[in-house]
Length: 247
Image (cartoon, rainbow, N blue to C red):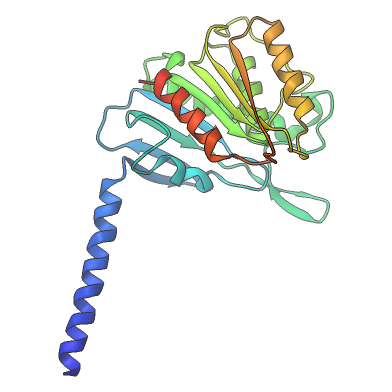
């Protein structure tokens, strides 16, 4: 009797294991972790485009892997997703993963961490562009909070024309300028909550105005009662944009 019960337990465990393996094999991307940076490589399709997504303050790239590596992914299955992680730095008594000093001022050059982040993301862009035959319009940038602000700065400053941008709860640095190589027709989507007290809605509206005044193809969506976060509605807007641009 004990032996029969044990066999039943083993059988159930094997079925659960098989189910997990089946689920893993069904995921659209192969996940690679290189020093904390997550890369999701298309399993069933040829790599045709790349999304570089930057996380927010005190997060990591790993946090967003399940966003993309799922059955109903935000990105097309031919899109490689690069999820870099910011270095850990001490501010006051806290250790945080940040892309730049949270107390950033009017100049980029007083923040060594920001310059490091710029160079790091630029290196990733260069590597991805090489894989895509230097077609920068097959590269899409985006991020949340700090990641949004850094990605938008890189998007506008980098001397290439990217495919587009999607950012949540971020803003454009006061010192940011716009490269002559930017494709002004490429879509820029800004998504913000009107109850965001970390990055007040005024900063998002100011960013929108600056980009619109430069004749950029920019759209801002404001969600009522949303704080400093990304809602399901925001994710769906991002998915709609990416599937229409990257396919």
